[in-house]
Length: 272
Image 1 (cartoon, rainbow, N blue to C red):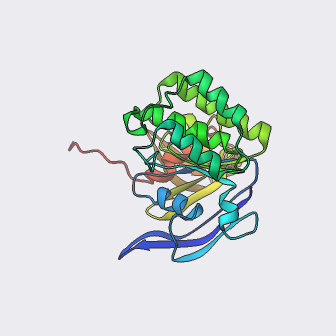
Image 2 (image 1 turned 60 degrees about the vertical axis):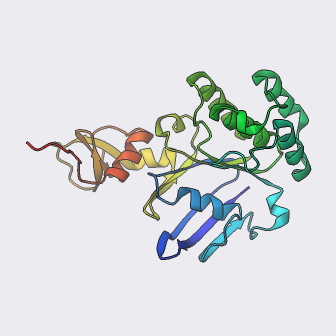
Image 3 (image 1 turned 180 degrees about the vertical axis):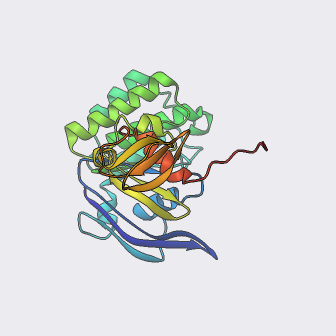
């Protein structure tokens, strides 16, 4: 599913949360929305799946506005995991089956067998990790064309985190689906991200395809002379610059994110 967001604006009362943000996602991509707490990531996702009515701008899914029919093709793992905490796991499975006409019982059965979900237990008795896993299983079994995942690896142990990342990558490669991920886990996202946007204080600082972003930036020593380019920010004792000049080295995904979020100032709480 293709996603187009143009000049999206929203405020809660007097507090502006989104300042006219724009980005596009192509079908078959894993798109990472990255930023600090309070940047507007969850609000952007809530606008996308129609949980709130935004103040201005446009959201188009395959060229269409969000509708009840289109929502059958969108599966969401929210920050809060379960809306009905007193439901059992089995209750949630029945609910998702009723909501999604393209539900894939075989996929869910594979999750059930591998992770041995206790579906007779109430959701509020699950650990945070189990809540995350069951929600991911439901979303991936839904048959939806667009998955919106808020912190999909939160509270998972390292082995399961890696399994989940592999599952998401394989899901997109084999099925041609689209995934939007909001996360703080920059390091692990580099393994699966196709494109991304960096969000801070309601503004998009930078958005691009990952491979293109690496080509357009360099990491250089702070003493190194560069004839032209734009200084983006500090990354530890080095500098992220945007340039086509063959200097320094190519940055990692993490260094691109940190450079844009950090800017040109270091914070040190110690006096010299």
